[in-house]
Structure formats: structure tokens, C-alpha cells
Length: 92
Image: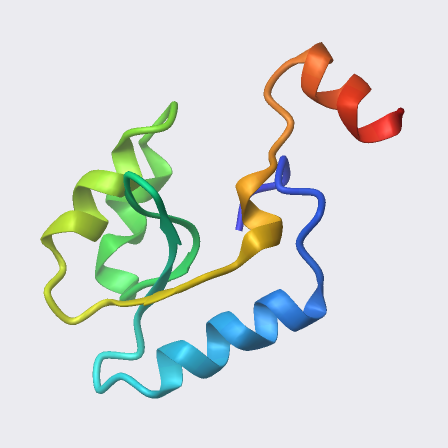
């Protein structure tokens, strides 16, 4: 989970965990129009790679190559704060 996804709540996290537990590999990622993204639960083996990523593309590469990952719709994940304009939209 990323800190800029401020609208996520405990129900979203429970849904993500529940979806991952329905999968033998215990992996799940949030479904977006252009593919899978964060928040996500993935195998520990990807930790080192993910820690070194910056921007919006690093994790998507992994998610598109994991055949056993399940997708979950989390509408609250669609909003994140990347700019001052995003923050203003949230606080207005």
C-alpha cells in the first residue's frame, strides 16, 4: 500500500486480503483500467525489486507477469495524491 492513496479504508484492505487468500499463491493486486497496481499483496520474493522502483511503472511490470495474481476492484484506490492540485481536490 502506498501512502498517497488516502481514501483507502479497512474494508478495502480486508477485501484485498480476502482476495489474496482465495489464490494458492496468496497474491492479489488492485484492478485499474490499464492493468494491475497497488495496493497489492505479492510474494516476498518480489520485495527487493519493488523497493527499488520509482514512479508509476515498476510494480505494473511485475503484476503483468505474475500469472497467479488475482485482481480486486478497490474504487478508493483510484484516487491518490501526486500533486498540490490533487490535494486541493481532496480538501475542497
